[in-house]
Structures are given as C-alpha cells and as structure tokens.
Amino acid sequence: MNVTPEPAQFVVRTDRIGANLHVAVAGELDIATLPELMDAVAAARDEMLEHVVIDLREVAFLDSMSIEYLLRLNATVAETGAELVLVRGSRAVNRLFEVMELGRVLTVVDELPDYVTRS
Image (cartoon, rainbow, N blue to C red; front, side, top):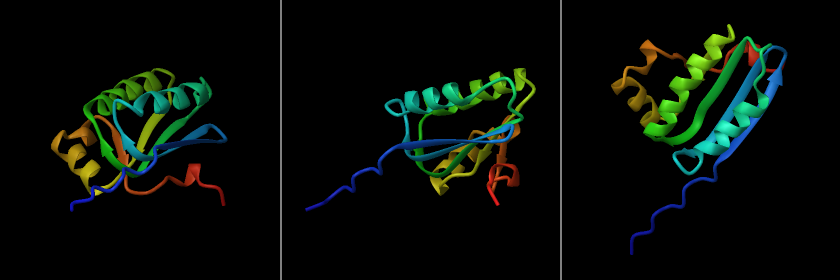
C-alpha cells in the first residue's frame, strides 16, 4: 500500500521590524493558499516600508500563479520606493526560479537579511 504524505499545513506569518516587513511562508503556495499570502501582505504593507522580505525557506511547492503574484508584488513595491527581497526556498522552488531565470528580475538571497532579524 502506497501512502502519500499529507502536505504540510500552510502558514503565513508577518513581522514588522522598523521600516521592513518580514513575511514567512510555510507549506505549499498554490492557487488554494495564495489568497492567504496576498491578504497578509496587503494588510501589513504601507508606504513607509523600505523592504518587503518574503521568506520561502519553508515552502515546499510554488505554482505559476504564485510566481505571477511575486512578479506583480515586485513592481507594486518598487512603485513605493521599497524593495521586494525573496529568501530562497526548497530545492524544487529554487529549481523553478533557476529555470524561469527569476533572479534576473527579482532580488533573491540565500539567507534572511540582517534588517529583518531581531538580535
């Protein structure tokens, strides 16, 4: 008997650190869960932000609608003078970023930037 593991629960956590927003995402980011991320980001964003950091380290899967959202969010955040920064996710997510060459249009980093960590 084959048993397929249940996908991890989807969780979005936002944390404002000064002029920076840290959005930690865990689970599968797809058409079913994307609205939760969109709502969390919309509720936490304002014109005074310098950086919006989307932490994908705990994301196991990312669909095309989620990528489209990240590209649109990048443009929207840039219009306010802020920067969208993505922290690399799982091997599958990273592979998708590489194949689509998203690093050419999005700021993608390996580790959480110091400005969104609390000492």
